[in-house]
Length: 389
Ligand SMILES: Nc1nc2c(ncn2[C@@H]2O[C@H](COP(=O)(O)OP(=O)(O)OP(=O)(O)O)[C@@H](O)[C@H]2O)c(=O)[nH]1
Ligand SMILES: [Mg+2]
Image (cartoon, rainbow, N blue to C red):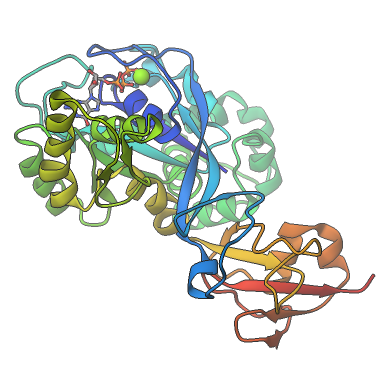
């Protein structure tokens, strides 16, 4: 899974990325600090079932477990800033949107303090709500451009022609069909005009590259008011307050053994020798950000992108439903992210195609109950797949 971090320049994308991955990247108070994309690994946070099952420990293999919290890895990509009319070549243009082709969803970082203008330059009061539409528009124009350039292959064609042109963009057949339906367009003998193409591209963006909004720099005066205004104006969008800088400070302090902090926690514990400056900085974060927003927002955004925007759930496959273990006796080794509504058979496919091919039945390990291939899985389920050898 890949999540792209996008937005206009100077909003804190690289700070967010550095906080989420602990990778050192260039961060500076001016536009276009990032040109080449930064790629790294971050973690989705879920409760590890070993705690509620009363097991003394677990043995994570594809993930980590810290203080009873299961951390499931996913890829994060930080790209260059995008300015309005990037599709016409403004700023760095939008060529680098191609870097985001493989993204499952996007986190758009917004400077909620309103101290950054549309081009990423410092200003006094810019309403950040202006940014909610602009990136969606740029992506739609970018998609429209791709379709237009290959129009000879699409015109007169069908769903396969569109899929062929959009291959590599992680766009599925179902998404193409749904987008055409939403835009009231026929996928038989395609004959769309410019406006149709744009409407179709807008729907593809919503389905294939959905966006969650990080209202960043929430620590700055005026940001809270802007956040409230944006939330009222866009009640249907996922907008989460965030202080990427605070998260970066916390994670670095934790890394150095100065504090104990699991990303996403609403508080931290000082454990090392802190000097007065460090103490004051951490106390500011605790009082002015964590207490007000139940954390810094960075982990909340990553989790919300996965669970609310992409609507995934966590399922734990095991081979021994009594010990919750694999055949080596490793307890709850793997955590898989699957779509909400996935069935036991779809889960088997995700673990191994052979398991799905020879599927007999599955077992809900918590309830010790046999379940069939069409059984819908729930978040946190522990499942044993029984397949013919
Ligand atoms: N006050 C405050 N400043 C922040 C926060 N996050 C980032 N910044 C600052 O905002 C400036 C821009 O940060 P970057 O992370 O480089 O922003 P960017 O969006 O990657 O910028 P480009 O790569 O140029 O597009 C830097 O001075 C950061 O220290 C935050 O949560 N609060
Ligand atoms: Mg950057």
